[in-house]
Image (cartoon, helix red, strand yellow):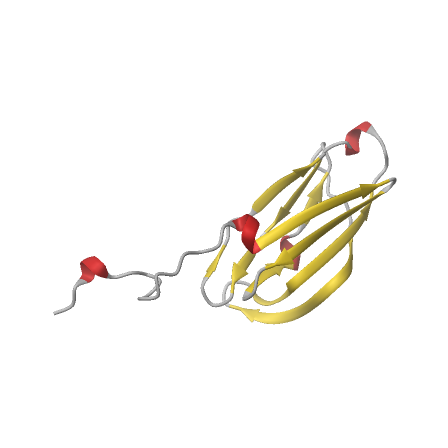
Length: 126
Protein backbone atom coordinates (compact mmCIF):
# COMPACT_ATOMS: atom_id res chain seq x y z
CA UNK A 1 0.00 0.00 0.00
CA UNK A 2 1.42 3.41 -0.95
CA UNK A 3 1.34 6.50 1.20
CA UNK A 4 -0.29 9.12 -1.05
CA UNK A 5 -0.25 11.71 1.76
CA UNK A 6 3.52 12.09 1.38
CA UNK A 7 3.57 12.10 -2.43
CA UNK A 8 5.06 15.09 -4.24
CA UNK A 9 4.69 16.19 -7.84
CA UNK A 10 8.43 16.93 -7.82
CA UNK A 11 9.44 13.45 -6.59
CA UNK A 12 11.67 12.84 -3.60
CA UNK A 13 14.27 15.50 -4.37
CA UNK A 14 12.59 18.38 -2.46
CA UNK A 15 12.88 20.53 -5.59
CA UNK A 16 11.58 24.10 -5.44
CA UNK A 17 11.20 26.14 -8.64
CA UNK A 18 13.33 29.25 -9.05
CA UNK A 19 11.54 32.56 -8.71
CA UNK A 20 10.91 34.19 -12.09
CA UNK A 21 13.51 36.91 -11.46
CA UNK A 22 16.12 34.24 -10.68
CA UNK A 23 15.25 32.10 -13.70
CA UNK A 24 15.17 35.07 -16.11
CA UNK A 25 17.28 37.98 -14.83
CA UNK A 26 16.23 40.86 -17.04
CA UNK A 27 18.03 44.18 -17.36
CA UNK A 28 17.36 47.35 -19.34
CA UNK A 29 19.63 49.99 -20.77
CA UNK A 30 18.28 53.11 -22.48
CA UNK A 31 20.58 55.40 -24.44
CA UNK A 32 19.34 58.10 -26.80
CA UNK A 33 17.03 56.37 -29.29
CA UNK A 34 17.94 52.76 -28.44
CA UNK A 35 16.75 50.45 -25.67
CA UNK A 36 18.66 47.26 -24.91
CA UNK A 37 16.87 44.52 -23.01
CA UNK A 38 18.82 41.46 -21.93
CA UNK A 39 18.15 38.27 -20.01
CA UNK A 40 20.53 36.04 -18.11
CA UNK A 41 18.75 32.70 -18.29
CA UNK A 42 19.34 30.13 -15.52
CA UNK A 43 20.78 26.70 -16.29
CA UNK A 44 18.24 24.24 -17.72
CA UNK A 45 15.81 27.08 -18.45
CA UNK A 46 14.84 28.66 -21.75
CA UNK A 47 12.93 31.69 -22.99
CA UNK A 48 10.37 31.42 -25.80
CA UNK A 49 11.33 33.87 -28.55
CA UNK A 50 7.75 34.14 -29.82
CA UNK A 51 6.57 35.17 -26.34
CA UNK A 52 8.66 38.35 -26.27
CA UNK A 53 6.53 41.43 -26.80
CA UNK A 54 7.41 45.09 -26.26
CA UNK A 55 4.55 47.60 -26.02
CA UNK A 56 4.47 51.38 -25.76
CA UNK A 57 2.03 53.25 -23.49
CA UNK A 58 -0.69 52.97 -26.14
CA UNK A 59 -0.21 49.16 -26.08
CA UNK A 60 1.19 49.20 -29.63
CA UNK A 61 3.85 46.62 -30.41
CA UNK A 62 7.38 47.86 -30.99
CA UNK A 63 9.59 45.87 -33.32
CA UNK A 64 12.92 44.64 -31.99
CA UNK A 65 16.02 42.86 -33.20
CA UNK A 66 17.84 39.99 -31.50
CA UNK A 67 21.43 41.17 -31.26
CA UNK A 68 23.08 38.60 -28.98
CA UNK A 69 22.36 35.09 -27.81
CA UNK A 70 21.99 31.61 -29.16
CA UNK A 71 18.55 30.95 -30.56
CA UNK A 72 17.70 27.35 -31.34
CA UNK A 73 14.65 25.41 -32.43
CA UNK A 74 13.28 22.77 -30.08
CA UNK A 75 10.36 20.35 -30.27
CA UNK A 76 8.32 21.71 -27.36
CA UNK A 77 5.64 19.70 -25.59
CA UNK A 78 3.19 22.65 -25.72
CA UNK A 79 4.10 24.62 -28.87
CA UNK A 80 5.72 22.01 -31.15
CA UNK A 81 8.73 23.29 -33.07
CA UNK A 82 9.53 26.69 -31.63
CA UNK A 83 12.51 29.03 -31.19
CA UNK A 84 14.01 29.46 -27.73
CA UNK A 85 17.01 31.17 -26.15
CA UNK A 86 19.23 29.60 -23.50
CA UNK A 87 21.85 31.18 -21.23
CA UNK A 88 21.69 34.77 -22.56
CA UNK A 89 19.58 36.88 -24.90
CA UNK A 90 19.71 40.55 -25.84
CA UNK A 91 17.26 42.49 -27.97
CA UNK A 92 17.57 46.06 -29.20
CA UNK A 93 14.71 48.31 -30.13
CA UNK A 94 14.72 51.79 -31.55
CA UNK A 95 12.53 54.25 -29.68
CA UNK A 96 11.71 57.86 -30.26
CA UNK A 97 12.20 60.19 -27.34
CA UNK A 98 8.55 61.14 -27.15
CA UNK A 99 5.96 61.03 -24.40
CA UNK A 100 4.43 57.85 -25.86
CA UNK A 101 7.70 55.99 -25.28
CA UNK A 102 8.43 57.16 -21.72
CA UNK A 103 7.06 53.88 -20.38
CA UNK A 104 7.42 50.54 -22.16
CA UNK A 105 6.05 47.16 -21.15
CA UNK A 106 7.86 43.93 -21.93
CA UNK A 107 6.12 40.56 -21.77
CA UNK A 108 7.92 37.20 -21.98
CA UNK A 109 7.58 33.57 -20.98
CA UNK A 110 9.96 30.71 -20.38
CA UNK A 111 10.24 27.21 -18.94
CA UNK A 112 12.52 24.92 -17.03
CA UNK A 113 13.45 22.03 -19.29
CA UNK A 114 11.16 19.01 -18.90
CA UNK A 115 9.63 20.38 -15.71
CA UNK A 116 7.32 23.40 -15.78
CA UNK A 117 6.60 26.72 -17.48
CA UNK A 118 6.28 30.12 -15.89
CA UNK A 119 3.21 32.26 -16.55
CA UNK A 120 3.74 35.26 -18.81
CA UNK A 121 6.00 37.75 -17.04
CA UNK A 122 5.41 41.47 -17.50
CA UNK A 123 7.89 44.25 -16.63
CA UNK A 124 7.70 48.02 -17.07
CA UNK A 125 10.61 50.05 -18.40
CA UNK A 126 10.55 53.74 -17.56
